Structures are given as structure tokens and as C-alpha cells.
Length: 171
Image (tube, rainbow, N blue to C red; front, side, top):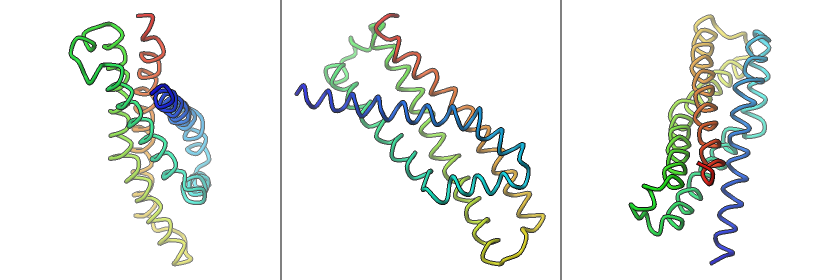
């Protein structure tokens, strides 16, 4: 049983660090730099999201984080015992889990589809071998703005999650 818990905890923490760290770097460094790069910024994002399967990797990492967190909470709470959830420790971990879940759902239903839409438009433009039309550029910029704003919120939710989980023993 100890090996099971240690494995879950290592996976949960490692995936959480990667997911939250990525969200912070994207929201506060990469996306602003891409935005300032103008039209060339699209090429940078295309390389990040298209070549190295970044959206897939982050989807897997965040899913592992959510699943391991759920399993750890089930074990820690004695099968989701209400008394445990009324303790400060239980409440703190629950808040962290809830905000991570909000970030996960937001990434799943806003960011991922947006990135896939941009990739589809970019692939169509590349296949035609011409510059994107004004409508395509406008659509990609609209989607990009939505994804950027969503990523800032995801970073916020994950910051709340990290703080509440890291401080759970001390609250």
C-alpha cells in the first residue's frame, strides 16, 4: 500500500509541477512574446503546438494530475468521509482540487479546441501555399485572444491550487 501511495504522490506532484509551471510560463512569458512578434508569432506557436505535440503532452500530464489527485483524496479521506472534508486540511485540499478541476475543464473545452482550430486553419493555408486571407487571419487572432485569456485564468486557478495544497498542513 505504501508503494501505491508514494507512486501516486510522485506522479501527482510531478505532473502538477509540469502543468502549473507550463501554464505560468505560457501565460506570462511565451504568449506575450508571441503577441509582440506580430505575424511571426504565429509561426512560433505553430512550432510549439504542432511539431512537438505540446497540446497532447499537456493533456496527458493534466489528466494524470487530476486522476492521481482524485485517487489520493479518496485514500486520504477514507473513501470520501464527510468528516475529513470538514477539517481544515480536507477543505484546503478540496479547494485545491476544485480549482485544478476548473483549470482542467477550461483547458479541455476552451484551449484545446482553440489550438486545434488554429492548427487546422494554418494547415489549410500551408497546403494552398499562399498567404492567409484577411478572414483567416482575423479568425486565428480571435481564437488566439480567447486561448491567451483562458490560459491566464488557468494559471490563476492552478496558482490557487498549488498554494492551497502546499499549505494544507499549515492552515
